[in-house]
Length: 138
Length: 487
Image 1 (cartoon, rainbow over the protein chains, first blue to last red):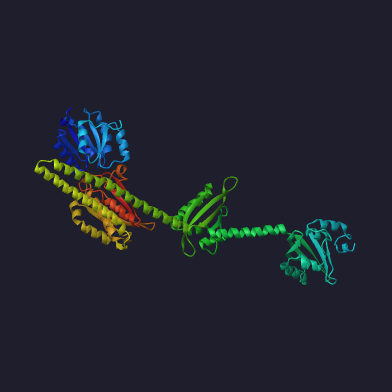
Image 2: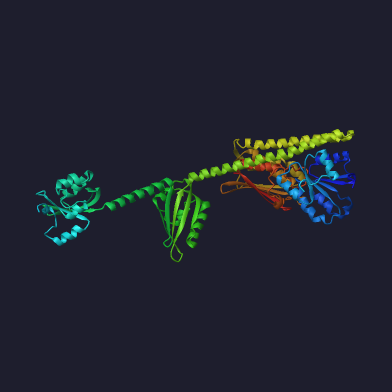
């Protein structure tokens, strides 16, 4: 699949980061559309709504530390609705400060493709969107 | 046979002589007029000699056998002419094995004769000496350890305290009743002791308590009370035997150690928070800044570049705010050492209400307060202002959209501690999910844009820097209650 036709989500409470992410992807023409959410809850609500079936993401960049619903809580909620989602979604965990526990958790999580530590460099961006980013351990 | 003439009970009364010679006592007779002395065979024996092995004479006995320090007391018993009954003295005599203790009894036989007995009491004397030594040793040890013993006779419901125990209580006489004894303890510990004694009587459970008591001289000291039950064959408690120890000095150093440990723990926590901010927040600003600069380079359109620059500006503002927060946390330790003053809760709280008047008005909130139970406190005014300010702004910020906000604040005294109770009927927090995070740094739970996650963190640090604590009870959509122990 042509990655420039993909829909990417950025779930992060940092507004500046969401803007930067959006702009960067736009300038580099990495995908068709970027949608931002400021916390996991809003994203889950969107995913659960069947009317949004046509607008589901191909790739999600998920922050860990967020108010209302954080990254790990999002993953728990995601597992519960995943069966109803008729699309393969790649999830990257993105955070500026990752603890050892988070790394282990991310590596062992079947739905998380990999974790990326902020700031994401251009190479990582490219790899993430072209689908060449794969689990290092697996 | 001339020598034997000086032996007593030799041939005149042979049966009696054999009997007497076989016991462990020596018998002598002294003729005052002739200065002649007769000894029984047993007297030689108890001194460790064969009859006739040493000279049987008054002068030998007085000059050589008797220990010089005991001579005077022995002679006094001989020379006492008025005494009717036997005179007793405890003297040391030189036996073949060295000096040993004897009990000497002296009796006058008319005017001319004096007779007496000597019994070896060396073993007994040694045990007695040892016992006295032991008793002194125990008493001295108890004094050093500040330990006293006590006893409750359960059947008679009677109490007895040793002198050492009375010394600890600084009492001159035994407490008349158990209740009187319990009354010596500080009010908050009486219930504990009463229950322990009752349990000990009822089921024989031993106890070991650290309790504070007020001595007869009005001194308040920490003591350790330990007790065990003496039970009969049916398991019924007859007697409670216990000790009491003055542990005031130890307890104070223990408490000091505890509070130092607490302080260090809190400082450590603050340092960890610093590390967290440095690694997380500052890092994310640095990352964002880098991202923006990269975008700025790549961007071709001017409007886009302008937009990017505006974000650089907002990063700079947030970075400044974070550094300001860090500064505030550093200041907490510095300010905590400043001088405390007497503060009227009422006055200070009204001041804060004035400052927040417009916020309260626009929120249409009702603020009630009652500081009558504890009108003032010795505290840092800057901290108390900050605590009130933070709690009030929080309560206003997180008020429920469904009802009018009612905020109450009151002060109370409990167990000599001053508490503030601060309550609202706002949105509340999910305690199961966020209860442990509420006082952490940069923790926000609501989707409010003006939530910074710094207020409660600073409030907690200020309270703890002055030795207090803050706890929270909350229910989602019902309200939040902060219980603050100030002092």
